[in-house]
Structures are given as C-alpha cells and as structure tokens.
Image 1 (cartoon, rainbow, N blue to C red):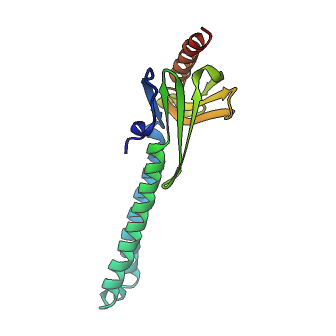
Image 2: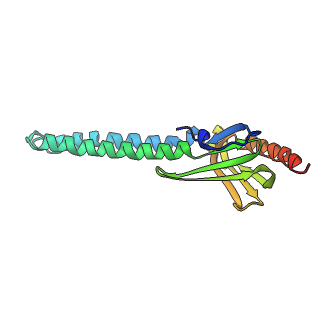
Length: 178
C-alpha cells in the first residue's frame, strides 16, 4: 500500500523525501518471531524425550497439528501486524509541508500535516551504540501550529534529515514573506 498516493498534493508541491524507521530497528521483532517459531519444535522434541508414548496416541497427532497450526497462524498475524505498523509509520516531506503518518496499529492511523513555514525548532538526537553505528535516531520538530510537536523515532540519518527540514523551512518562509 502506497500512502503517498492518498496525500492530496497542491499544484506547485512535490515530494522531496519519505522517511521511515531504520530497518535495523525491526531486527528485534524478527528475532522474537524466530524464537517463537522455533519454540514448538523444541517443545515437541522435549515431550518426545520425556514422554515417548504421549505423541504416539491416535488423538495426539491431529490435536498437535491443530494446536501448532493455530499457534503459527497467530504468531504470523502478530508479525504481520508489527510489520505493517513499522512500515506505514512515516513522514512525507514536500517542498511546502511535512505530513506525519502515524500508524498506531493495523487499523488505526493518524495523519497530521504541518506547513514548513510554521517550524520553529528542529532537533535530531542519536543515543546509544547501535544508533551511532547504524546512524539512526529521533527527529523532533516544534511548531507554532495546532500540533506543537512532530516526532519520528529511529529515522535513518537524523542529522541530515534535520538539515533538510531546516533548509526547506527557510525556503518556505522566504516564499511566505513575499
């Protein structure tokens, strides 16, 4: 799903960049998913060692297939839900405004926009070893508009993004002051 198509652009407006979370920040979710996917295999192996006759029963195999199918379906749905939330949470930066698409969960989204000339302060911060190595961090924009603060967490190259937003805001202020 490409949310950029749903944003109504003005005639003179063009998209400068879209900003999403850094892919490295999704690795813990993948790691947890892989652990949860491997757990039933370990449980079956352990049950087979402790109670060898338990899994030979005629009823055990269909119940096991039913249970493990429901289990794997559940963790796949949770993984998909986390991925959709991770992927669709973004900023769309144009030459005139900033659009914040905040994906709360699978079926809940908030879209806020901010004219660039209303920007008062842009802050980027990188804290920690992995954010420093992989160059991701938070970018916070304070405004004079109705939404006082826009934050994107774990953005790739936050200092470069901060400078880009500041440059676009300065250019937009020049156009609005004419």
